[in-house]
Picture 1: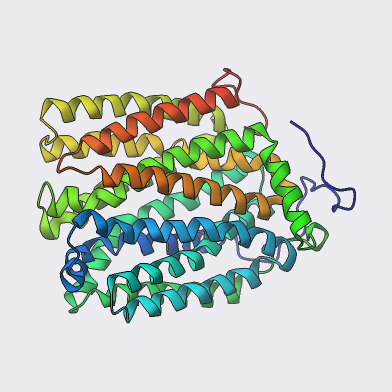
Picture 2: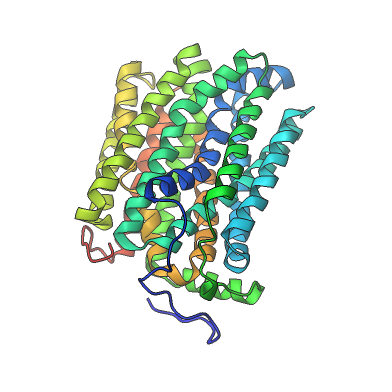
Length: 423
């Protein structure tokens, strides 16, 4: 669906990007991936610290510890709606460095938290700061690439983003060995410091001057309205949010499933978590290689359909063992599903942004807000349903996956698997 903004908008973005004087392809991908990795490590390396935090603050209900994940994601989601419009007006560099200063402030507050409520508030601030990296990484990629090239780059970025969970709990566990859960936040501060130095030194401003937009509520409203009137953007963003809910439900429950509530792996928890995350990382690497040849739509649609099928198998396996299947069996089915979901999520993100190149920053911001909040709320429902079995995760995957498939079918008017020059 084609819609226009106010007559005063900049000239439409062409397929020929301005001359590039920044890092080469590999370094560009690595730097953008690090922007995304700040988000991932801030979630996952805290998981091994849950028992220590519960003990220090006398948290009665273990499920309440999941709030450390979900309030972070709420702050992360809400803040995204502001970073995109600001970056469309003032540039990507300035706004990213501002967001990182907020992230550092939240990390410092968490280290001195005297109560669990204070720690939750600090996590909200952390999420607000980390949102800048999420929004601007996507916008920076969109500034430089389009179509299948963008999908390929985003797949490589997402691969790094998804590999981080393989080592994040181990880093958290190593920090705990230093004597306190507070040291987990030290690792977050170090990562943020590396990003500040590297980004400042190597990444030029990617937003071309002709595409800058005056910051005003009217301009933001026009851009949001344009986004909402685009069937492809809304449809794929909704599907992405539902699939994000699967991931968030699993992450929120993972410490209880693998450690304190079900399988009691103890120090082996990071290993189990890493194996599942490794399946996602492998899939995004395969996706990056295949998407240029096969296209985003066929690849993501097949991945989603298979994901729903395996999710049903996951429920059947859970029921067959009264919610407590053998660990190896649970890990195999879960890893397979995480592998399949990784063919859908990066491509859905690229497909949602593809028709919105003129307003990449604001569109990325608004869609990031929408998908994150939707994912956090769906994940919260799955996580809070944890009852000492694996059934809530399996049922959550099956239901949210089926809903995502219905949304994609609506978006494509029932014509799945079709490709094209840009999809």
